[in-house]
Length: 89
Image (tube, rainbow, N blue to C red; front, side, top):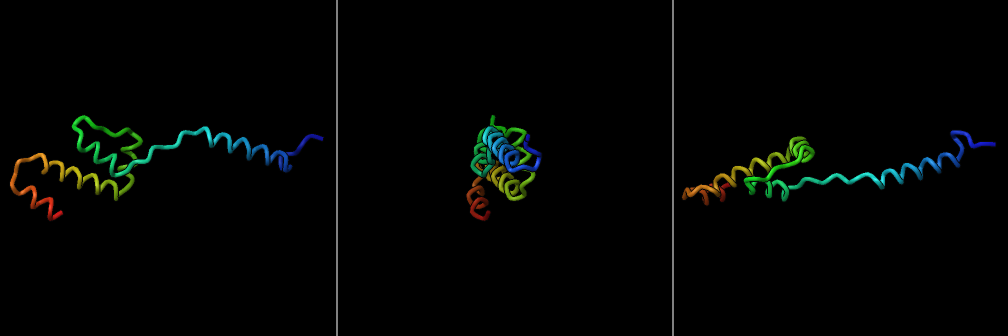
């Protein structure tokens, strides 16, 4: 008699197939503050579409990115107030 859809044999085979499929999927690259700092510090740096989506969907990462952009902008200037400004941040 062939196994039915709810038989333990079918369920076990389905579990094994699903586990094998999950193992073949690529793991998404996590976006962190180090990636953002590298991108902000490099004039030619850019984020992928997936990384941009992760950045804009995470309010803490987005706030850190804005802070790094401001710090980078002032670090590049020759103003004497730069050190004081960065100290106050």
